[in-house]
Image (cartoon, rainbow, N blue to C red):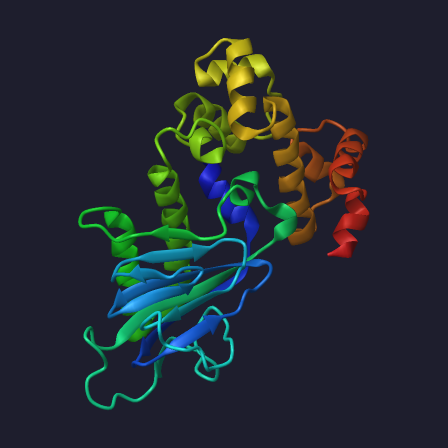
Length: 310
Protein backbone atom coordinates (compact mmCIF):
# COMPACT_ATOMS: atom_id res chain seq x y z
CA UNK A 1 0.00 0.00 0.00
CA UNK A 2 1.21 3.52 -0.74
CA UNK A 3 0.57 6.29 1.75
CA UNK A 4 -2.43 7.93 0.03
CA UNK A 5 -4.22 4.60 -0.48
CA UNK A 6 -3.67 3.76 3.18
CA UNK A 7 -4.91 7.16 4.32
CA UNK A 8 -8.25 6.53 2.60
CA UNK A 9 -8.66 2.85 3.48
CA UNK A 10 -7.99 3.40 7.19
CA UNK A 11 -10.05 6.56 7.59
CA UNK A 12 -13.11 5.62 5.52
CA UNK A 13 -15.94 3.86 7.34
CA UNK A 14 -19.53 2.95 6.54
CA UNK A 15 -20.91 3.31 3.04
CA UNK A 16 -20.40 6.40 0.89
CA UNK A 17 -23.59 8.04 -0.40
CA UNK A 18 -24.26 9.85 -3.64
CA UNK A 19 -26.99 11.28 -5.84
CA UNK A 20 -27.39 13.02 -9.15
CA UNK A 21 -29.69 16.04 -8.90
CA UNK A 22 -31.27 18.23 -11.58
CA UNK A 23 -32.15 21.75 -10.42
CA UNK A 24 -34.58 24.05 -12.25
CA UNK A 25 -34.04 27.79 -11.78
CA UNK A 26 -34.57 29.69 -9.67
CA UNK A 27 -33.04 27.47 -6.99
CA UNK A 28 -30.75 27.80 -4.00
CA UNK A 29 -29.84 25.13 -1.51
CA UNK A 30 -27.96 25.13 1.77
CA UNK A 31 -26.16 21.81 2.33
CA UNK A 32 -25.77 21.15 6.03
CA UNK A 33 -22.42 20.50 7.60
CA UNK A 34 -22.03 16.92 8.78
CA UNK A 35 -19.35 16.36 11.45
CA UNK A 36 -17.38 13.19 10.84
CA UNK A 37 -17.87 13.23 7.08
CA UNK A 38 -16.43 14.65 3.88
CA UNK A 39 -18.86 15.90 1.24
CA UNK A 40 -18.45 16.62 -2.45
CA UNK A 41 -20.34 18.50 -5.15
CA UNK A 42 -19.54 18.18 -8.87
CA UNK A 43 -21.15 20.40 -11.48
CA UNK A 44 -22.17 18.29 -14.47
CA UNK A 45 -23.96 21.00 -16.43
CA UNK A 46 -25.80 24.32 -16.29
CA UNK A 47 -25.28 27.53 -14.32
CA UNK A 48 -24.18 27.26 -10.70
CA UNK A 49 -22.70 29.56 -8.06
CA UNK A 50 -21.00 28.68 -4.81
CA UNK A 51 -22.79 31.26 -2.65
CA UNK A 52 -21.26 30.42 0.73
CA UNK A 53 -18.34 30.45 1.09
CA UNK A 54 -18.14 32.73 -1.90
CA UNK A 55 -19.61 33.84 -4.15
CA UNK A 56 -17.70 31.89 -6.81
CA UNK A 57 -19.07 31.15 -10.27
CA UNK A 58 -18.77 27.44 -11.03
CA UNK A 59 -18.51 25.76 -14.43
CA UNK A 60 -19.42 22.27 -15.63
CA UNK A 61 -16.69 19.90 -14.51
CA UNK A 62 -15.83 21.88 -11.37
CA UNK A 63 -15.31 19.73 -8.27
CA UNK A 64 -15.86 20.82 -4.66
CA UNK A 65 -14.71 18.77 -1.67
CA UNK A 66 -15.41 19.73 1.96
CA UNK A 67 -13.07 17.37 3.84
CA UNK A 68 -13.98 18.51 7.37
CA UNK A 69 -17.76 18.33 7.15
CA UNK A 70 -18.54 22.06 6.81
CA UNK A 71 -21.72 23.25 5.10
CA UNK A 72 -22.02 25.19 1.86
CA UNK A 73 -24.65 26.86 -0.27
CA UNK A 74 -25.17 26.44 -4.02
CA UNK A 75 -27.57 28.34 -6.28
CA UNK A 76 -28.28 29.08 -9.91
CA UNK A 77 -27.25 32.68 -9.20
CA UNK A 78 -25.68 34.59 -6.33
CA UNK A 79 -28.84 36.75 -6.19
CA UNK A 80 -31.26 33.84 -5.63
CA UNK A 81 -32.45 33.77 -1.99
CA UNK A 82 -32.16 30.55 0.03
CA UNK A 83 -35.70 29.72 1.10
CA UNK A 84 -35.62 25.94 1.62
CA UNK A 85 -34.43 23.97 4.66
CA UNK A 86 -30.90 22.63 4.89
CA UNK A 87 -30.39 19.21 3.38
CA UNK A 88 -27.80 16.46 3.59
CA UNK A 89 -24.81 16.48 1.21
CA UNK A 90 -26.50 13.80 -0.92
CA UNK A 91 -29.51 15.68 -2.20
CA UNK A 92 -32.56 17.82 -1.41
CA UNK A 93 -35.02 17.06 1.42
CA UNK A 94 -37.46 14.25 0.66
CA UNK A 95 -35.66 13.22 -2.54
CA UNK A 96 -32.80 10.99 -1.44
CA UNK A 97 -31.59 8.39 -3.88
CA UNK A 98 -29.69 7.98 -7.09
CA UNK A 99 -31.47 10.65 -9.13
CA UNK A 100 -33.60 13.61 -8.05
CA UNK A 101 -35.27 16.47 -9.90
CA UNK A 102 -35.90 19.72 -8.03
CA UNK A 103 -38.43 22.23 -9.30
CA UNK A 104 -40.66 22.01 -12.33
CA UNK A 105 -39.47 23.71 -15.49
CA UNK A 106 -41.86 26.51 -16.49
CA UNK A 107 -40.39 27.72 -19.72
CA UNK A 108 -36.66 28.39 -20.05
CA UNK A 109 -34.64 27.61 -16.94
CA UNK A 110 -32.16 30.41 -17.36
CA UNK A 111 -29.41 31.11 -19.87
CA UNK A 112 -27.70 27.78 -19.20
CA UNK A 113 -30.79 25.61 -18.83
CA UNK A 114 -31.23 23.30 -15.83
CA UNK A 115 -28.28 22.62 -13.53
CA UNK A 116 -27.17 19.03 -12.93
CA UNK A 117 -24.97 18.20 -9.96
CA UNK A 118 -23.40 15.06 -8.60
CA UNK A 119 -23.22 15.15 -4.82
CA UNK A 120 -22.23 12.76 -2.08
CA UNK A 121 -20.61 12.16 1.29
CA UNK A 122 -18.10 9.84 2.90
CA UNK A 123 -18.21 8.77 6.54
CA UNK A 124 -14.85 9.20 8.27
CA UNK A 125 -13.45 7.73 11.47
CA UNK A 126 -11.98 10.84 13.07
CA UNK A 127 -10.07 8.73 15.61
CA UNK A 128 -8.02 7.35 12.71
CA UNK A 129 -7.62 10.55 10.72
CA UNK A 130 -4.25 10.88 9.05
CA UNK A 131 -2.42 14.22 9.46
CA UNK A 132 -2.60 14.63 5.68
CA UNK A 133 -6.38 14.96 5.97
CA UNK A 134 -6.06 17.40 8.86
CA UNK A 135 -3.83 19.59 6.70
CA UNK A 136 -6.49 20.03 4.00
CA UNK A 137 -8.33 23.37 3.72
CA UNK A 138 -12.00 23.69 4.67
CA UNK A 139 -12.93 23.69 0.98
CA UNK A 140 -11.11 22.26 -2.03
CA UNK A 141 -12.17 23.69 -5.39
CA UNK A 142 -10.77 21.98 -8.47
CA UNK A 143 -11.81 24.12 -11.47
CA UNK A 144 -12.48 22.34 -14.74
CA UNK A 145 -9.85 22.92 -17.41
CA UNK A 146 -9.63 21.31 -20.82
CA UNK A 147 -7.32 18.31 -20.63
CA UNK A 148 -6.68 18.74 -16.91
CA UNK A 149 -7.19 15.77 -14.52
CA UNK A 150 -8.55 13.46 -17.25
CA UNK A 151 -8.76 10.48 -14.86
CA UNK A 152 -10.99 12.46 -12.51
CA UNK A 153 -13.25 13.47 -15.37
CA UNK A 154 -13.54 9.83 -16.49
CA UNK A 155 -14.57 8.65 -13.02
CA UNK A 156 -17.13 11.47 -12.72
CA UNK A 157 -18.66 10.45 -16.07
CA UNK A 158 -18.79 6.78 -15.06
CA UNK A 159 -20.35 7.57 -11.68
CA UNK A 160 -22.97 9.86 -13.26
CA UNK A 161 -23.86 7.14 -15.76
CA UNK A 162 -24.25 4.50 -13.03
CA UNK A 163 -26.52 6.76 -10.97
CA UNK A 164 -28.62 7.87 -13.93
CA UNK A 165 -29.26 4.35 -15.25
CA UNK A 166 -28.78 1.66 -12.56
CA UNK A 167 -27.79 -1.71 -13.96
CA UNK A 168 -26.75 -5.15 -12.75
CA UNK A 169 -23.81 -4.79 -10.36
CA UNK A 170 -24.36 -1.07 -10.06
CA UNK A 171 -24.21 -0.99 -6.26
CA UNK A 172 -20.69 -2.42 -6.23
CA UNK A 173 -19.65 -0.20 -9.13
CA UNK A 174 -20.87 2.97 -7.40
CA UNK A 175 -19.02 2.13 -4.16
CA UNK A 176 -15.77 1.48 -6.05
CA UNK A 177 -16.15 4.64 -8.14
CA UNK A 178 -16.82 6.76 -5.05
CA UNK A 179 -13.63 5.51 -3.40
CA UNK A 180 -11.69 6.17 -6.61
CA UNK A 181 -13.26 9.63 -6.86
CA UNK A 182 -12.05 10.57 -3.37
CA UNK A 183 -8.54 9.34 -4.10
CA UNK A 184 -8.36 11.26 -7.39
CA UNK A 185 -9.66 14.48 -5.81
CA UNK A 186 -6.96 14.28 -3.12
CA UNK A 187 -4.29 13.39 -5.68
CA UNK A 188 -5.34 16.33 -7.85
CA UNK A 189 -5.17 18.69 -4.87
CA UNK A 190 -1.62 17.55 -4.15
CA UNK A 191 -0.67 17.96 -7.81
CA UNK A 192 -2.24 21.44 -7.94
CA UNK A 193 -0.65 22.73 -4.73
CA UNK A 194 1.47 25.83 -5.22
CA UNK A 195 4.92 24.91 -6.58
CA UNK A 196 6.58 27.00 -3.88
CA UNK A 197 4.92 25.05 -1.06
CA UNK A 198 7.96 24.03 0.97
CA UNK A 199 6.44 22.28 3.98
CA UNK A 200 3.31 20.35 4.88
CA UNK A 201 1.79 17.21 3.45
CA UNK A 202 1.23 18.62 -0.03
CA UNK A 203 4.99 19.15 -0.24
CA UNK A 204 5.75 15.82 1.48
CA UNK A 205 3.72 13.85 -1.06
CA UNK A 206 5.52 15.56 -3.94
CA UNK A 207 8.99 14.90 -2.50
CA UNK A 208 10.41 11.63 -3.90
CA UNK A 209 12.66 10.91 -0.89
CA UNK A 210 9.92 11.45 1.68
CA UNK A 211 7.38 9.47 -0.35
CA UNK A 212 9.83 6.57 -0.66
CA UNK A 213 10.20 6.42 3.12
CA UNK A 214 6.45 6.80 3.72
CA UNK A 215 5.65 4.06 1.22
CA UNK A 216 8.17 1.76 2.92
CA UNK A 217 6.51 2.29 6.30
CA UNK A 218 3.03 1.75 4.88
CA UNK A 219 4.10 -1.28 2.85
CA UNK A 220 5.68 -3.07 5.83
CA UNK A 221 4.87 -1.37 9.16
CA UNK A 222 6.02 -4.40 11.20
CA UNK A 223 9.58 -4.26 9.92
CA UNK A 224 12.10 -3.06 12.56
CA UNK A 225 12.71 0.24 10.84
CA UNK A 226 15.42 2.63 11.98
CA UNK A 227 16.21 6.13 10.80
CA UNK A 228 19.16 4.65 8.90
CA UNK A 229 17.11 2.01 7.06
CA UNK A 230 14.40 4.55 6.18
CA UNK A 231 17.08 6.95 4.98
CA UNK A 232 18.40 4.17 2.72
CA UNK A 233 14.88 3.77 1.26
CA UNK A 234 14.83 7.52 0.62
CA UNK A 235 18.31 7.51 -0.95
CA UNK A 236 19.68 10.03 1.57
CA UNK A 237 22.12 9.94 4.43
CA UNK A 238 20.68 9.68 7.93
CA UNK A 239 20.80 13.28 9.21
CA UNK A 240 19.55 15.07 6.05
CA UNK A 241 16.75 12.52 5.71
CA UNK A 242 15.58 12.88 9.32
CA UNK A 243 15.60 16.67 9.04
CA UNK A 244 13.77 16.70 5.70
CA UNK A 245 11.13 14.18 6.81
CA UNK A 246 10.34 16.09 10.01
CA UNK A 247 10.19 19.46 8.24
CA UNK A 248 7.70 18.18 5.65
CA UNK A 249 5.46 15.88 7.72
CA UNK A 250 5.66 17.56 11.11
CA UNK A 251 6.93 14.39 12.81
CA UNK A 252 10.35 12.71 13.08
CA UNK A 253 10.50 9.44 11.09
CA UNK A 254 10.25 7.05 14.06
CA UNK A 255 7.50 9.11 15.70
CA UNK A 256 5.49 8.82 12.47
CA UNK A 257 6.21 5.07 12.36
CA UNK A 258 4.88 4.62 15.92
CA UNK A 259 1.81 6.75 15.20
CA UNK A 260 0.99 4.76 12.07
CA UNK A 261 1.46 1.42 13.84
CA UNK A 262 -0.96 2.47 16.59
CA UNK A 263 -3.46 3.75 14.02
CA UNK A 264 -3.40 0.38 12.27
CA UNK A 265 -3.73 -1.38 15.61
CA UNK A 266 -6.78 0.72 16.49
CA UNK A 267 -8.46 -0.26 13.23
CA UNK A 268 -7.69 -3.95 13.82
CA UNK A 269 -9.07 -3.74 17.36
CA UNK A 270 -12.33 -2.25 16.14
CA UNK A 271 -12.78 -4.26 12.95
CA UNK A 272 -11.45 -7.73 13.86
CA UNK A 273 -11.48 -10.15 16.77
CA UNK A 274 -7.76 -10.90 16.45
CA UNK A 275 -6.08 -11.45 19.83
CA UNK A 276 -3.80 -8.75 21.20
CA UNK A 277 -0.60 -10.75 20.68
CA UNK A 278 -1.45 -11.22 16.98
CA UNK A 279 -2.18 -7.50 16.51
CA UNK A 280 1.05 -6.64 18.33
CA UNK A 281 3.06 -8.77 15.87
CA UNK A 282 1.27 -7.30 12.85
CA UNK A 283 2.29 -3.77 13.84
CA UNK A 284 5.88 -4.59 14.78
CA UNK A 285 5.89 -5.39 18.51
CA UNK A 286 7.52 -8.54 19.85
CA UNK A 287 5.64 -8.48 23.13
CA UNK A 288 2.08 -7.73 24.09
CA UNK A 289 3.36 -5.66 27.04
CA UNK A 290 5.38 -3.29 24.83
CA UNK A 291 2.47 -2.97 22.41
CA UNK A 292 0.01 -2.18 25.22
CA UNK A 293 2.28 0.52 26.63
CA UNK A 294 2.71 2.18 23.22
CA UNK A 295 -1.00 1.99 22.45
CA UNK A 296 -1.97 3.53 25.78
CA UNK A 297 0.39 6.46 25.19
CA UNK A 298 -1.44 7.31 21.96
CA UNK A 299 -5.07 6.57 22.87
CA UNK A 300 -5.02 6.96 26.68
CA UNK A 301 -6.70 3.53 26.92
CA UNK A 302 -5.27 0.00 26.97
CA UNK A 303 -6.08 -1.97 23.79
CA UNK A 304 -8.71 -4.21 25.38
CA UNK A 305 -10.70 -1.30 26.78
CA UNK A 306 -10.37 0.58 23.49
CA UNK A 307 -11.84 -2.41 21.65
CA UNK A 308 -14.77 -2.63 24.08
CA UNK A 309 -15.43 1.12 23.85
CA UNK A 310 -16.14 0.87 20.13
